[in-house]
Image 1 (cartoon, chains in turn brown, cyan):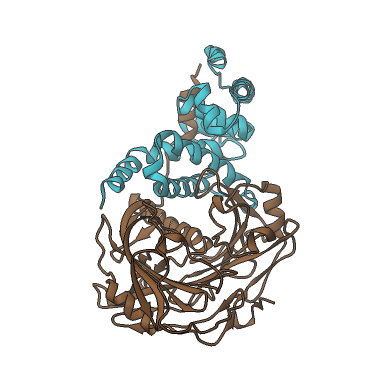
Image 2 (cartoon, one colour):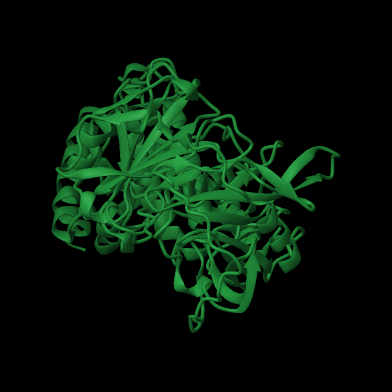
Length: 381
Length: 173
């Protein structure tokens, strides 16, 4: 006569040696964390986390859109322009500047574009311990479309003029999320010291540089207020470049429209993913700044395409999805391997307003352009 | 290495064998079990700082991942050498033969019932804990325990293996 516990032990028998060790599991966990960060930050519409050439996660920016000052300041009245502001026009989903440098810092081409703003990462170039070229993310440049007012926390402080136009410089505390510094140190939801420079680049149009200058953990590269000023002086609008998206959704909730695009290819030194967000047209219209990947921004469906280091097995089903609460207990997502590619798409519903059935129906309606040829992706009409 | 990572390392070192056993008994395939455990622990790594009860969390995700593993079509199509065999292999030593017969019986217990039995009697979980891990009601866990035991007892009987009658009491726990 057996007890069931004994029987189960008998049934288990002698386990074969595990095919991995603790180090392998930790390495897998670190890869998962990087992937989630990429998805979360990319989908949030921020320009945020970057990968070094070596594959190590090196840094994240101050994230203008993600970080919120701990103490909301009083908004100062604008200073008077020294000269008439040039009239500018920027169409929605249009990139209006390119990479440029000042001092030891470089603004990468903007990666995020919405109906209200575009975001670019600011990096410092350096050599890693192996003498290999690497970049450390130190801040962001956000350019708001004319008529769109930046968050109030950026419009206070010391009054400055940039190219004869009014602006503000301030240093403040802000909550920083998913921050990975140049040493690969990860911190989340910590209070950080940050510099902000906001100025009017044209009539009724604002630009903001934001950078973390002090963290509880090490911060190997950081900008000073003077560095921010040098970048602002070097900034200028260029030729418009319409954004492109590599996917089409055959099925969306009625009335939903394109809301945000993040990422322009899979081969840049910047974001290694592309995120496209759709949201109700009422949320997309108007001049309110939204990032759409935060539940507080309301309903949205977030598509993030990632390049898989390990392709799916050849006998993997072509259309099977995997759904679950992978990055939080309330953030349902479904993922698919994109057939005949090394890419996968993750479909998320940050506000948790869609059923799993609806999310799957949306994901299964997707069609993709050639992901390796960004020039052939659909232009935004 | 920061403190939390060192704690995670210690947790995995201490629990890896039992989690692998849990996964194997749930899905009946060592390869699938190892995949499920690796995937689950990498998830736990990401959430380590926020998980208040890592043992419970690990058991939950491992069992669910193990159930998912056997549902994957390409898993079903693969005849894994280390999976529960279809039938016993009689020409081995007594202990090995017994193991094979037990595995053959376990393999025939429906996956949901098998998961409940494994959690209750291998992982020593209460009805309430098993319900939380599997996301089912306590009533369902009790009924699945009862049915699973009945199924297993019947299957084992065909293999000339008797299961303790005292287990009936466990269904009421």
